Length: 138
Image (cartoon, rainbow, N blue to C red; front, side):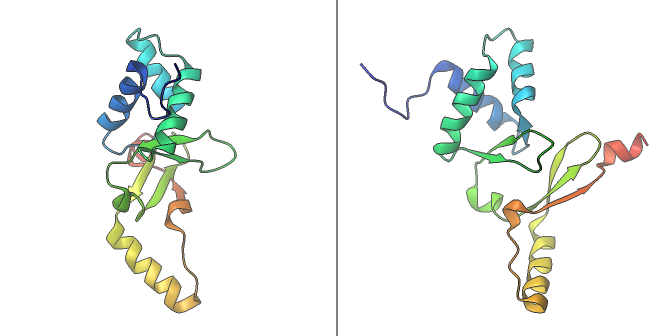
């Protein structure tokens, strides 16, 4: 008997639970694998990719590919509207991805639209620099 496409295994539930525990933080497959490996959970990289694809299709996870150098990262999407209204800040040293608050974005979006008749795609907008932690260690 074939399982329904929305069927979720214990491994899938564990992956979803881990992602939701990150409170919207972006995470790579490598980091997910390290988490489960440290707990001897027996969840391999292929399984993680398979479940992330299912969760993305179901709208529970968003996949981000910021550039051609780094791998994709994933984010648990609890509030879809909130997740559609922010720029990303990516640290060039450690790869951490942060969200720029939406009130700052609204001002910039209006200014660019009014001044240049150009609508910014916030989902694909990434500003590169250094995070506070890397700045402190510099």
